[in-house]
Image 1 (cartoon, rainbow, N blue to C red):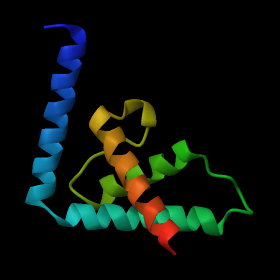
Image 2: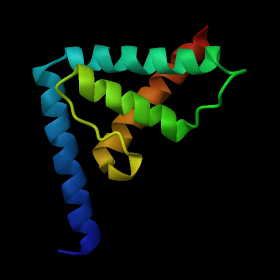
Image 3: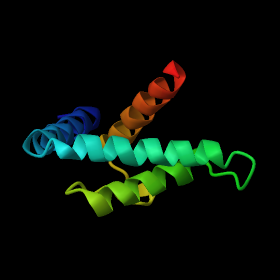
Image 4: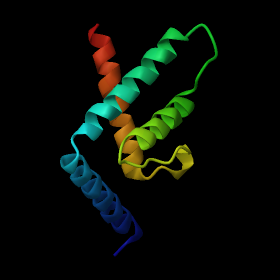
Length: 102
């Protein structure tokens, strides 16, 4: 099996495991969304103050999700798996789209 195929299989297995965890504990989704909403709202409210980079914001979100749910996402973005990155990206998209509606 080629390296890229092995990478795809690994990512699919990670996502499969994560989706299974979400189905077993649906509160993870709502808690994760609340964490992301709060983080982006606070970032917006603090726009005139200290600038928080996207990477720092995602690290905060990952840390709080890990602290408040049964899902563990490393705080350090360099340690994020493909599934971690995808989950955080989707959370960001959902929150950004919600904010655009208002």
